[in-house]
Image (tube, rainbow, N blue to C red; front, side, top):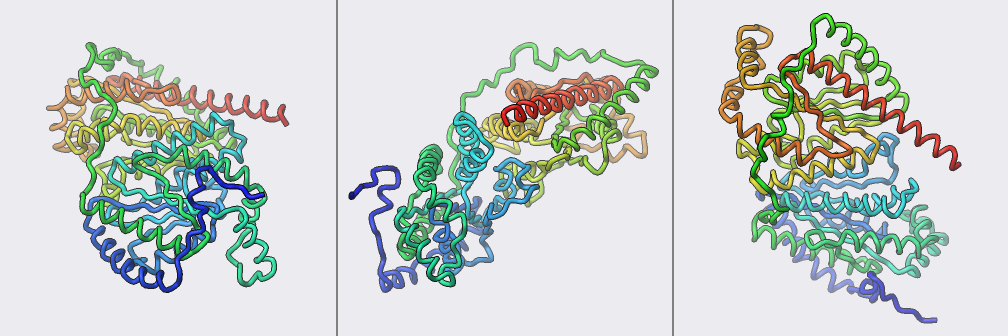
Amino acid sequence: MNTTNTGLFAASEMGNKVDKQEYEDAVTALRVELLNLQFDLQEADFSMIVVLAGNDRPGCANTVRTLHEWMDARYIDTHILFAHETEAEEERPILWHYWRRLPPKGRIGLFLGAWPAFTVQRAIARGASDLEIDGALDHVERFESELTLDGTLLLKFWCHIPENVLGQRLKDSKKDSTGHWWLEERDWEIHNTFDEFMRVTERTVRRTNTPDAPWSIVESTDHRYRNLTIGRHIAGALRDRLEAGKVAPKATESYVAAVPDPNILDQIDLSASVAPEDYKKELKKLQARLNRLSRSMVEAGRACVMVFEGVDAAGKGGSIRRLTGAMPIQNVRVIPIAAPSDEELARHYLWRFWRHVPGAGKTVIFDRSWYGRVLVERVEGFATEPEWRRAYEEINDFESILHESGIPVIKFWLQIDADEQLRRFESRAETPYKKYKLTDEDYRNREKWDLYQEATHDMVTRTSTRYAPWNLVAANDKRHARIAVLRVVCERLEKELKERKGKGKKSRKRR
């Protein structure tokens, strides 16, 4: 019976071919254009990412090799992902693999392996429901949106071959294994479950086919047609972007700049305090409790992220030291965040934080964090208004991914009043081992106290979520702040361990 494919991939089963002479003639001019465009890109204010995926895995690999021949491989960052995920890689969110490998401005990132496909693949392997898979694809859409809004030129190619072509290749490989060494067990798996594979593929491609990051479905049966089509598309898209310059961000969600009266920070009782004798007893008890919980988190293979933000001189460092002093030192790391380096400025602002997402049993504490985008960068004008406005949802999505991956996010804002801040500044200036903490910038920031308080109000109200709520801590009294932080951390870790234990019991019952 003759059948016709009328689905998403119908247009890529037309039998397109390019003869050898036509191919060689076209490649000569295309190579020159690609090289020139690649060198022009080095001076541009954006990066380009090319994603290659599809049911023709060997064909994708062939195109990667071809692009390396046609272009200058020194300026291409190539990543072949998920051939064999290590245990450490499996512990982290799927998008962690891609965030940490993003190319800087002026370079090309070439990815053999697409995040939408692997997101769904991992979700299915872990028994996710359709609703959970849709949620994972929501994260993929937002990831791509964050890249393109930041100026990245994102090109996605899906290399498709019909079932009969894949079947013939596999038959031929049995007869002549030396001629088909590039075929692997995964290619047999695709063939043996072709209908289901294509059903999931079509759903994934349709779901992540957006105006700013569309899929280009390429017929992959003939390697000359595939390589020429992809090469021309890359050249055309890069040429258009270079001529247009960095694309201005599109309008983002509506944003109400006015701050309700009173500001949420005004609701914090800054008179809260703890007596010295009570502090010593409570500190000892809470640190012992935290030590036990930290070891349980390690045994359970649970990671954790903590975020400390606050007014300058609010006591973040002191609170962090009371935490790390009670935790197994080999399993905790403090990341101090200062002004971004040139390497960090060349990428999306979240890149430097994704790099530090902890593995199983590890805790990472951020002293300042990604919230700088909506605080200092907003107030000081280091980020444009569209950039910091859209950052709220970008941050919420980032923290949601961590939560869904089993990594709790515990966030603290430490608040003091302006008089207490000035007193601490003066004390630092008189204390030899604290002088390094005080800079001219600290005093300049005081002049913008109201602007920072307004920005903090917006930050708290827009990024305090069910899975990552803000803990607002009265810090005029340092002892009170440290006890409050320890107590919140202990209670949250106990909750996380209890929930995990409950899920484990349900899982055993199902088995």
